[in-house]
Image (cartoon, rainbow, N blue to C red):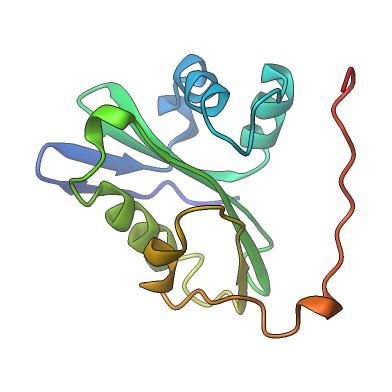
Length: 147
């Protein structure tokens, strides 16, 4: 079980406290994200309940998030990274990714993986790079019910 982690920057709070998550806001974010369109809300809620989730808050309003699926030792998958449109361009995405990588229980993770269509520049700042041997990697993708 992950320890609750919290840090502050200016008027913003970043927290891994699952009780602070606003799942209505999370589902709203993800309904607009290219990677999660059509994802049923109940599937998102199950995924978030079984992941380490970082929320960014302006006061009590959730304005960003990132989700990590991990064993806390060998592997971590960074996903569902989102900053509300009204708060982009202020370095919050960089702060979020840096905070995830600096989390005390994640600092020693050996292999990180993520997928992105358009944020390569952001993640390259944190030493993410294209797969060196993509031919070795495989995946299995099943549609959600009704697709």
